[in-house]
Length: 129
Length: 368
Image 1 (spheres, helix red, strand yellow):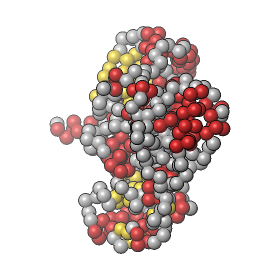
Image 2 (cartoon, rainbow over the protein chains, first blue to last red):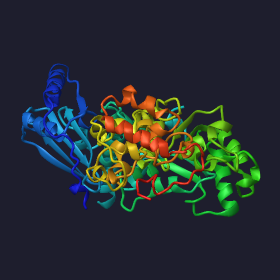
Image 3 (cartoon, chains in turn yellow, brown):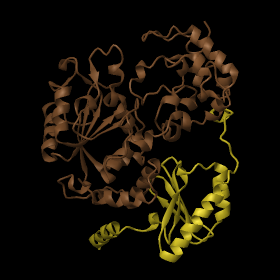
Image 4 (cartoon, rainbow over the protein chains, first blue to last red):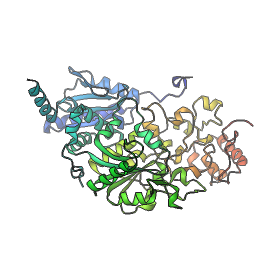
């Protein structure tokens, strides 16, 4: 018998959490627009079912930017239809989700090249030329 | 003390990681995972990454006393590079007699050197209990466990007791406790001590707590000295089988219909209701499963003296609580009447008082 055969499944229907998160995101986006203040919502810390997550994804829609970061497993970064709201999913080496965040910002931090690495690269490129 | 002050070497962790091919993004991802696992505010990940990258590598001395090496196995058992294993890049493990290449005098000199070089700044990790009955029961390089603990603890910044043995005495302390085993906190009383119990503890709990100590200092602890972030809720409250408990649907043995249908394991001895740990959410083996998901009740391994808390296969209600009273307790308001009669039946069979009563086939739900 496989694990999948055990007839115990989590309750999987929308619970209304997606609406609650949308309200929170609306406040965060307004603060970003008015004051430039960025925020992050950790989806794993909320009691959301898979159906809630799917519903939230539908509500947020799909934007025009999609990026993949490869570092011990991949990270997927997608802008939603609401510009400034980003859906960031970090996967471990086995492609299991290790954290899932909604970032309200101009660019998610995982995409920005850190100045320490830029300085290191500048030395490296100078060394080969 | 800030992490920046805690090491004499000049290379920062950020520089070290870049030199070793670990990108800043990987680093940030690790911090996001730790922040999420510890229920820290999401923005803490960025602050954690920034603080860690400016810190120098933290000196760590790891002492193993009366233990089975399971805790070390747990933290190191990984065949692929995982985010959790990154913690080894953050610390300078200056002494660990199982893992270090040096042996004999050279190994002990490494410990003494680290103690001198990082006086007052190193973290001491301990796994295993200490025999208080007779110092000769367990020695390393001719030094008794108690003496080595007292010597190394004296100049430590903080102590992390990894595993139930170091935290509460564990298996060596189980009745009749032939070595007089005691916990680290029974001997050292003047240093901050973080307990990370479990037999063994979950790897990400160990690495998460270390990352927290390196960045934000000692995390919030509960009455048993455990970080609230990982030990704040019972296994029962986070168990995916909890809805069956609430509906009074219990497996009565390990091969009955209830067991096959994945019902609650309370009646076959699950200690989930009295056990605080994060197995039900963090799980084991890269999140594959945890004991209850595999069909076995929780044995309560992160609680003090769990070895002496009665049979792993007897319902909690057959212990010191009168089952008749228990059956009317508010705790089981949602349970079916049949449950109470099952417990009475079980209580009748349980001459349980003897601490060394062997586990029988009947205890495990089988038929004689």
